[in-house]
Length: 107
Image: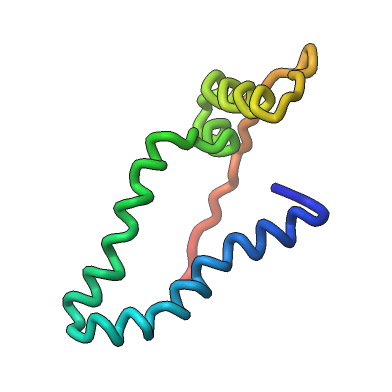
């Protein structure tokens, strides 16, 4: 969650890879005309990004939703450390549960 100028930068940053991929696809198809090889050429670069899943931590919001408070706090501590901030005294994470009322589905 970002605000101000960063919301524009993050928005562009999230959409740029899609635009770049769609722009480069005709060029790639020109040099790799057979569809099966083209499919392989399009799919292989994702293997470069698989190792990042081992490096990046889980989202603190997701960890909280799963009831993993200690892990979420560790991730937030690390983020505060990287950003050069200080964790406020007395600030702690609390698990909040909601009861959802199930309504019968109608067809």
